[in-house]
Length: 621
Image 1 (cartoon, rainbow, N blue to C red):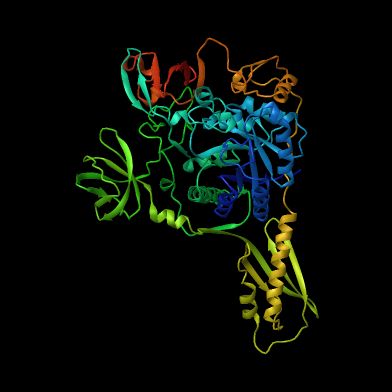
Image 2: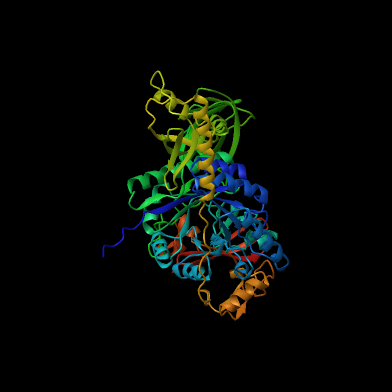
């Protein structure tokens, strides 16, 4: 028996959207799927969307075969369980394809047959956790951002469901779902979508001798950029490539989505037997994407090629000087004279550009360009910068103006054929890859034209106007038959309508995951507050899995232990970042213990060198 040839694996580009308008732009710029916040209980509390808005988005996305995933990925309180269940039924009725979730209570609810994807908030760091989530009923697993390529390969080999991995955007310093800093220090829970971003604030670092090492943004990380790593991630088994940014504006989503669309297309085109597109439609953009010009704090591939045994000690991971986006470097100050800055510039500036800077002694700030004349810069407000200050363009006025316009179209290629059915009827047929052929007919007697009418027919049938279709091929079987222009236009309109209806009717419904017999989670039979159990249904789920002891989430009850509370656990190591790794004699450079102070609080840093992890422990205010 001849073995079956494996089918190419669809590679999904998953883009973020704060609202439906930005989601449409993500689709037009090449997203195969979009994730967007539900009316409530999404992990970005300020990015909720109504059921009606989501329903309209689904209608827009369906012809392209683009999936709409809705985030319901916060923990849920007891008095909210019923309302969340009703909301999910409303989302199902609106046609969404899947929900991205964190709280295990959903697996106890009476839900419609809708896919559940395990959010990054589920803190999936290894194959055992991924397999357990699959067996629990999750249909797609979002792995921790910190996961290295070897572990990604192990996870993908251990599960039968698609694995989703972040490739671009902001990084939490802590493992997602395992950060309690905001809740403990401000009462705003990251697990409830209200993170106060304590990691982006400045702190003083004090060594064991009481010396102040410095005051910087020691917990603020750079942004992820894995454009250069898509091939090895796909080879490791990743199916869904996720861009972070549900609070970002449309220009960011356009730029980054298009950059990754083009990169994935190159990968797919180079490996057509292994990979294929996960949606349909050809994107035509009016600009070349450049992620260096989009919001970023500097880039890192973030441990993709690092393990506890083989840490990357020289790669900069943190954005110590500023938690803000500096932008691309455009020059250096030569001198400041009065209200004029004289600078060596690598690109011309325009009135209205925004510049940020880092002085030679590490001071940061920014200003708007009121006027630019060659290398002479006139700030909107008087500012004096020393020679050697690095200048970065954090706001490119001309590019932002361009991105605010219509910058891309996405059209579905159609192979057209016009032919005669019989002496009194003609047909216009359109073939779309993956869908097949759709035909419409119209009465038309076989009257011969005086001159060759084929070019006239071709021109008339090429005018698809503001539809989502474009002619990819054309065959005319009518010979010298005469067909009125009005009839050709009617056939074209009817075919466009028929194709659209067919695409909507052929929407693929994702099936919920299969649930295996419930088993003990990798965390064991005794769950601490780190498992984020915040309601009775989640507790019952875990008891059904064999768990015998459950400590509530800190949002429900603050731990009573006298031991220091771990606010964060992170693969990022401040010692390694500062060149004082304990494995390499770093205690002589920076004596233990290390303390971070600031914002009215004090934390102690604990270093787990065996596993190459750092913990930020709370010592009080």
